[in-house]
Length: 119
Image (tube, rainbow, N blue to C red):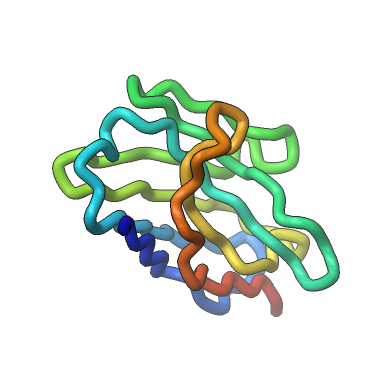
């Protein structure tokens, strides 16, 4: 059973930065999976905010393009999300998991990490 543990969230002022981490324990195939970061704000559906293939190609929706950067370290079974120029609308709980555009076989969701952007 793969366990996902997200960390690095917090309270930041608009324009600030945060770096999120997601460690996947118990996975022997992590490096083969396309991974992604997602977020869910109160009352809204979970949305994908960054994708990274097994070959480290990345993709972002327009809402975060140029501000967020996803990366991975397969030796540590870890995915990162560098978030810059944060806006209040980025406030949400952030999760990582497989890229759901490429597979239906998702890992169990972790607890997520709260990001709050407020002055």
